[in-house]
Image 1 (cartoon, rainbow over the protein chains, first blue to last red):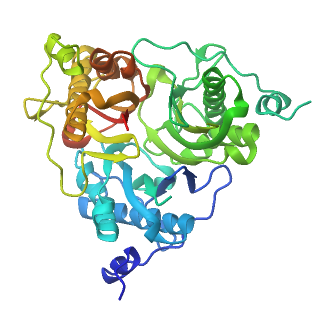
Image 2: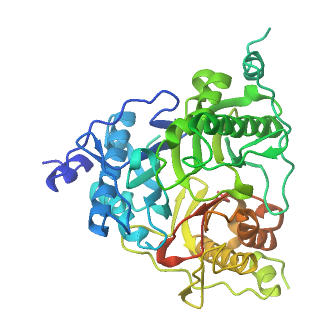
Image 3: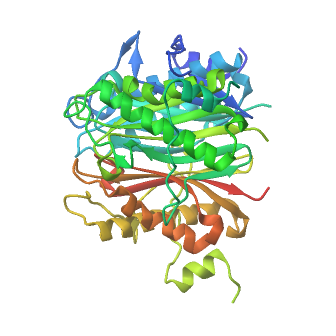
Length: 154
Length: 154
Length: 154
């Protein structure tokens, strides 16, 4: 079996979701030079938003799973934009937003759900810069939203 | 009449505002290579900040109007930086922040106020990647803040 | 004495901290082309997180000091990544997140603590685009988090 991002994800039991279709006023990805900008992907599973607030009705493990789903959608958007995940040269930057109470301060652990998926899929090329912050609310009640900048082969 | 971003905005009744002068410690725009980074523009009209909190004292329609004003200021900053909006090659990424209650989850509809203005002004070149999140508070009580990355002609 | 970013910081009494070691799932910096992306740096001093919430238990002056510490860590990360701060060509963009009550709206004054440090260290090359927003919570209870994009000499 060829060692590719998709085979590594599959070996860990992950299935790439069908990425969302473009929504009216914006698009999922824009390629500018050799940087692919990916719109914020909200946590979801089986077509339903994964809702929750860390520090209230969602624990860190569930938050990590939600963040992992953001990562799967980010990778699905990469594949939709690039055709072949082999064109991914480097995950450059992730911006993580976590629906949080005022008292919840483990955003890094939550967003690790996305970050570790990038390492799994892309190895060293998956090592990225990151920010992770709390927010009071996200679209559709999502627990987590993550956007990304990815360097691609010219 | 020549079909330009400004003529399309004018035909829809929009007037580009006078962009804010540089504030002490930072600047409105930085051009790096062929990417123009634009500082977060807060919602405002006629020189006054458009204040409000979605889910409390501002409804979605008013939030969209506030977001549209952010878009007008972003475009005004592009013009100030580039001289000619014809140099805009692509709106690459918008980062939208919406002052929200914990229960307000229609940030996408609000930030569409900015996104749709970009489509109106720039057509296909206005189609961008985006993130939209809730925040508890923005500078000067603004309802919406949006920053941008724009690809320009070399 | 040679006039360098480090000599200017030293003359103002600032000591560059030891930047944090890479944390498991992400890295402090990624260089893509001539842009250095720096992970969000949380406010800290002498190895302890500077905690607080603006509008509640921290005033603007203390918030500015917290933001300044984020700037020192950003510069320390630049030095760790580049070896020589003379390779910094331009501070392109700062993203500032301030732990805030719903009523605190002076995020710009707080994040000026970071911005003014960039001007002090890098002069005209330190003039950057910026966004500054409130958030309900940051990692480890930090008062401020700032990430950055920096253009470096090829």
